[in-house]
Length: 458
Image 1 (cartoon, rainbow, N blue to C red):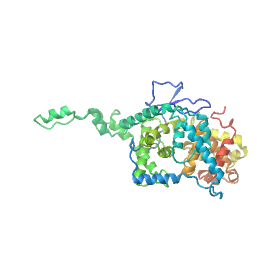
Image 2: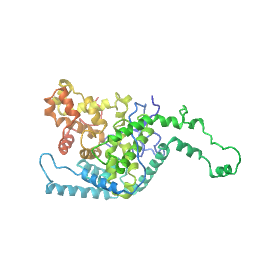
Image 3: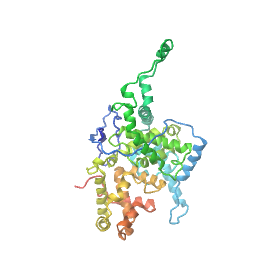
Image 4: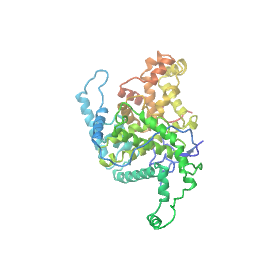
């Protein structure tokens, strides 16, 4: 049983529920001098999640190999023509896209960002490539404040905090011991060199010995996280294997995996009640990918730090779903699955009845993965980015829009589900078919707001 506790701010009604500061989700990383007026809830630690490992912090010059893959990224995220044979975009669609880009550029250039306007733009889809989506996501997640005058200060402070965390928590025990003791000072080395007699050995305390069983030992903590790190490494190898950005043995992909590894290990160490859960790598991937497309030199050199901060903020809206001890609570995954079932019943009782009682395909069998991993394993990467624009742009929070999308996914394959039995329906929902994503998101948006609110039914 883990002894750590996780503190999360209470969500506010009809507002985004992301924390205001870096680390509100991270134990011991709160800025205690500030009080944002929200209450804290302490949760008992739950089951540990499986884990990952990270990359370096700071800006490195892109090699020719990096530039090659960067060009590949730009091609990768370009919209594909619709499968219905629409072919190249029409002139009107090109004009509309240019107008949206212009509106977004104008909004992001203002001294005070209008978040409501930004949310409306994001809900219709943000442009691929460049720095627009990266900037918009940082604002929508609360990492950047609306006032541009505060950006430099906030970014500098958060990036410095992340650098300190890496220095403190990602070094090996031997490095930790050397730093703590300072090995030998220059004065001590000089004195020793002038002394005759037998070779002097440096003493090692019981707490710093690799074979120490004491819980205060840095080696005890190091070995405790070994399994988590191994799980993180395995998961990173499986992250989007079709994309050279994440997979392969190039210096570019290795650098990306190392950075993600650092982020996931730090999250696990700072949140002992949650640690790492298998699949968190999939949630981190879109954030890290989008932030690497930022053309600003300072931002490009701090992708890892910015990704960590936004990953923490994103999980703060759904972290209870990863804690097994909270499964049956009002904030656990089973309660969220129940709300999805209620949402479907309110919008299509015939389909709800067929799934619940005729074919007996309950939400636990297919929607658990949809919700916990924010749909990152149900669609190709390009579509995931588009869905996340709508999730982050929803004024009522990620979970509200997520449930809408999940319900829309069921409604869009209604005829196939009504004609299917348990096996056929389960296979369909666990391997969701290709679909016109704009149509799916429109169906989600059109659902009754009263039934999809982020509240428990009485």
